[in-house]
Image 1 (cartoon, one colour):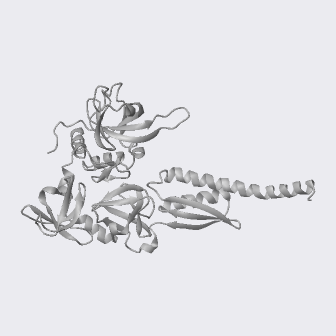
Image 2 (cartoon, one colour):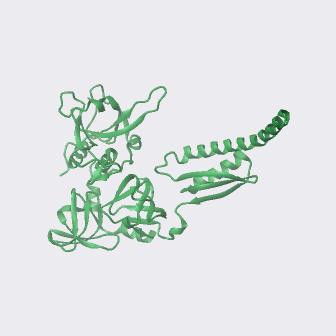
Image 3 (spheres, one colour):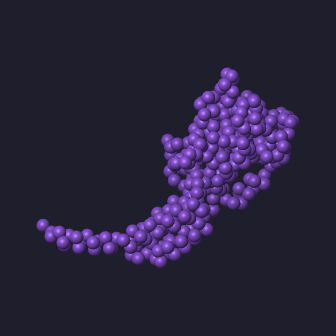
Length: 388
C-alpha cells in the first residue's frame, strides 16, 4: 500500500507537469476559435477543419483549409499564444492530387450534392446543368465541390465534367442558352420522336448551336450534342439582360412551381425544400440568394411588416422559427415569399399558397405564431408590368 503522503506528492508532481500543457491547450483552442469566427464562421461555405497535437515542445497543426490567408493567421496566432514552434501538417485545398483539373461543369439536369461522399448520405443541395463549380478534393467516386454561392458538398464524379482553368474559361466564353420552361428533353435529332439525350429543367444551361426551324442545337460540357425545342430556351446573355427583379416577376415565377413536391436539399423543379424554392425563384429572376433559410435571413434588409402585414410588399422573404429571447438565440427554420393581402407562397409538403388571414381557406395559424421577421430583397420601387 502506497503511503498517503507519497501518493499526494506523486499526484502533485503530475498536476504541476499538466498545468503548462493544459494552459497551452486552452491557448490553442482560443486561437482556433478566434480565427474561425473571423475567417470561417459558416462551415457550409468555408473549409476550416483544424486539429492539433504536440511533438516535443512544438505544436503540430493538422486538418484542412482552403484559404492561405486563414492558414497564415492560424499559424501566427498559435506561435504568439504559446511561444512554441509550429509544425504545419495542414492540407490546403484544392488537393494537389487533382492536378490541373480544378474546375467542373455539371452535366446532369440536376446534380445531387450530399453531406458525405456516398449516395446514401443526406442531400444537402442541388446544382444544375451547366453550372461551373470548383473541385477541392476527391473520394469514393465523388468530388468535394464549391458552388457559385460558396456552398460546399460532395457531388458524384459522374455528374460533372472535370476541366482545367482554360477549359472552364472557354465554356464561360461560349454562346449558351438557358432553359426557361419547367421541364424538357434534349433529343438526338430535331424531332419529337427522336431518342432523348438527357432531360433539362428550368435554369439548366447548355452550349448553343444553330437554330433550325423550331429546334435549337445544343451541346453539353462532356461533348454530348442534341436538339431542344427553341421555345424551351433563351440565349443566356440576352436572358440575363432582361431580368427585372420586381415583386410581380417573383410572384409569377414562384407560382410556376405550385405543386412541386417538397424535397429536403432540393433546389430544382424536381423537388424543393423551403429555401431551395426561394433560391430558385430569385435565381430565375437574376439574383443568387444564399442557400439555407438561416443564411438567407442575412440577405437584403430587415423591414417592419406592421401589425397586419400592411407594410409587407410582394417579393419580401418571410422567416419563421423561434424569436430571440433573453436566454435563447433567434432560430430560423422556414422561409416563404410574401404575395399580397396577407398571402404568401412556400414549400411545405409541396409548393403551395398560405395566408395569415384567419378567414382564408389556406390560413396557416401555426406559421403565424412562428413568424420571426421579414427581409426585403427588392429594394427598388416596384414596377407594375409583369415580364412576358
